[in-house]
Length: 512
View 1 (cartoon, rainbow, N blue to C red):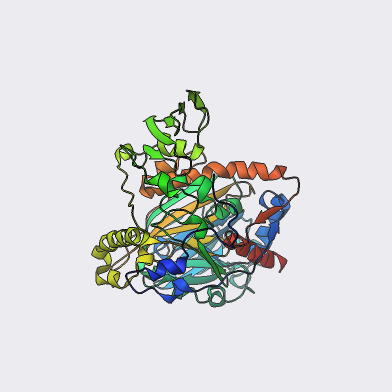
View 2 (cartoon, rainbow, N blue to C red):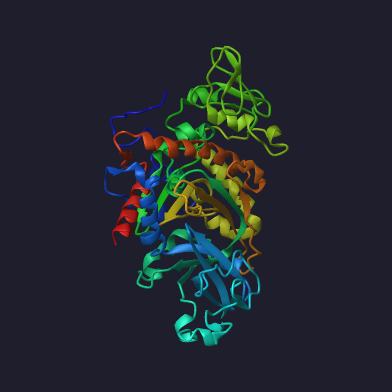
């Protein structure tokens, strides 16, 4: 069905350097830079994704001791604005204490432990505990204790809120509860060179969607760290992405993947996808790039599938057979065309470009360049085609994924409360602003519950359908790994570089 052994250490197809040689503009050297992780294998015990003991170890040695992104500066624009950052069963307050000063404290009254804030707040003048009324200034200094005569050991010196270390990068606010952790600048390393020419200081949060998932936070994050899953999970991307020939590199606490677009996956038969599909619709009538079967939306939750030999079948969006002699279908494409769609999406025509790779990439880059010209002006003429076309996605340990160049995607993954088998997947769109202009106010969080569809967040656009494909797998991964008899999960030497790098850093952090 797909290519497997090639006799080389890579999949068939053009290399990324060869694609860069075709670029119509000067390519930044950072895209050509090679910094691979030494070969593996990396093997982990599946229990780290569901074990209570391991989860508790992560709380003690990871979340209490690592630099982690808590919020954006624009979430707390004015003095007294406060953000509640929760991670596992821990909670912290991040507060703006001055025009350019931000502090953070554990979110707990020092009397009986009641959370001082239960939600984000604007213009807070002090933190007064709702239980007994103890009061602290936004700088953390103890201001008032009712009946203080009854607490002779309590004073501002002994019971002011203990500060949590704060670091700031690109408009983001990081915290680290560990007073002895490495300096924030050392943790980041030379990160800035990877986010040129439009740094995050020039970006605002245009979209923020948070989805609850029934899986460990690492299961969710790892599903978004590699392109190896595209061949099975995202058949709709196989005619536009060179998935198996993605490039992977590591830099300190950060890893990078570059997946080239504007070309076929090495798994695909070019002759198959070249056949015209009459009435093709992006979300309602598509051809499977591997099998050649055509999937067509009848109504919501009903999909007609026509195989290349003429057999047909009707399925629901979860690929359950309804009728017809064809009794098997791809769940990903059934959901793609038969699942929930925002109004009008079923009418959108397929505009996938075809032809030689250099022409496809140039056409995609030219269209994107003109799209961004209104915002960036002639800055777009100094960017390479690759920076407009390719998927360049980073991971900064432990749990955020900022995307490079003009792709606005920014992910964060974190545990949902105290359950090792639940997590939150956050997607933000960090959109650029014109040079010298002020960032607009950030989007408010749009929460999606466990059983909500990503398409309920229409602001995600096409990504909503892509995410639906991703999360179909995750609860089954969470359940299935408990049945692995060998108690071993093995990651690919190269194609899962970013995951291997993450586990190296995680093991080192937990060993400290």
